[in-house]
Amino acid sequence: MGDVDHERRAVEYVMGTAQYAEALAALVDRTGRPEAEVREDAQAALAEMSACIDESATRVWDRMGRWLTRSYEVDVDTSRLGELAELGRRHSLVFLPNHRSYLDPLVLRAATTGHGISSNYTLGGINLAMWPLSELGKRSGLIFIRRSTRDDPIYPAMLRLYLGFLLRQHANLEWYFEGGRTRTGKLRPPRMGVLRYLVDAFRANGDDSDDAYLVPVSIVYDQQHEVSALSQEESGGSKAPESLTWLYRFARAQGRRRGRVHVRFGPPLSLREALADAGTRAESDDLTAVVPRVAFEVAHRINAATPITPAALVTFGLLDNDGRAMTLAETLDVLEPLVAYVRRRQLPLTADVDLGRPEGLRKALATLVREGVVVEYAGGLEPVYAIAPDRQHEAAFYRNTVTHYFINRAILEAALVQAADDDPASEVDIVAATWTRALALRDLLKYEFFFATKSEFDAQMRYETDLVWPDWAQESPAANQITELLAGSSLLLAHRVIGPFLEAYSVVADRLVTREPAAPLDSDGLVAESLGVAHQRWLQQDLHSPESISKDLMGGALKLAGNRDLLGPGGDELVASRQGFADELAAAVDAIAVIRSLALKG
Image: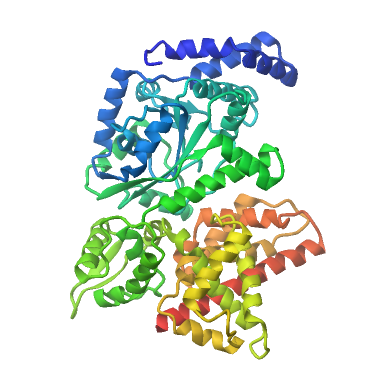
């Protein structure tokens, strides 16, 4: 499999299989085109996507990778690599990392080299296939695939066959199943396309074929050059197209030291067992129900492996303080209960998290000051720190790498406020009302975070409730005591964790109400208008979180509106439903405002 002729031989091998003959006949029938034309296009597609792992090319590629990643020291948790190497002797390993940077594949390659794990065939967008590097990449295992095949049934059919060929060869695979780099810092909803093709190929290989193992991978950077450009895109800016000039500028920007990049591996997942378990849970063999469950399990494992960095904690503490700068002592006061909470839950931390002491915090702040994300003013009695003007999105990017760890706590806080607000004077069952509100908030945020099943979510919420309100099972406080209960907590997170999401959603919902229900909805126009309105409301101090001025978050709001059949067309009933959606989000934002007020007073 290592020489340059592999690509040609792989194409010939695939085209000589019974599976190819069946696919070709089906494509001729589907397209109505002559068999010779379909065969020619199929061969061209296979030639375009085929790659090999050539030893000499790989050495050159690795040298280039070390140079491009020179900004970082690679920090790898090697505890799982022995297990992966053993599995890889008998099965294909399918590495599924999160995607934060163009450097991710080079970092993962460096992390696994020297541990007995074969090099990966890495699937990437064909937009990055720039000659002459594309030829070197193809000989180093890079499979450049088309981003859109909506009008071409031939290409996906050939990709399925090629993936099946690689699985039969016990080749290792790698791709970034979010479909693109995260714009907000958190894990994006997975794209199902390539995973669906892999599952199709795995099943087509038959029950007697060897298993494959999905390997969740978390990659987190202390600092990233790309965050500035990603933040501009989030605020409505356009993405710079990839080109050789772009690549030159990107490579030059990696000359500065930016700390460490942390690589963590989650527990590997047997594809055969995952499909069987997902089918049982979905009560169906339909892959449209099964594949998302497998993808979400991988996403849960990536999130659970993600380590908390000093940058994530510091930006967590400095954001959403009503723009107020903080002294070192004040920042410590915010972070101490957060770090205590993290340690109580035994969440994974990088080795350099030492924020409980002034020196450790000062070092973390200095790193962010050097990157321009945080500003320091030292001309008074003592230095004060704040997020730099117009850098809130970048700060939020680092914070959002770990918000998934705090989502349940944030939902509980907001749900308690909403439950108490239902009827403060009545003897409402606070526990039942809080659970109802928590489920409603969970549904509002389901396109932003990966939630457990309802039974698991119930157990998680009970755990969080024990921390906030230890005697909740024995004594239920009156509604008018909830504010007092929360005010006495040293840790309030909802305004920092879910406030920006709910504010962005609320802006979109308000603009949706103004749309003519019977007319087709211009989704792109609605998002563009919502971005402008959010920016205006931020300038007028009507929005608290500038991170809510986000194309990605507003796209999530549209997904939710579509899920609730609010995009139209319709009549009076649609008008009422859209207004109800806006009211629901406004109430959630109001609850966040209560939490924010209590936190700032504290």
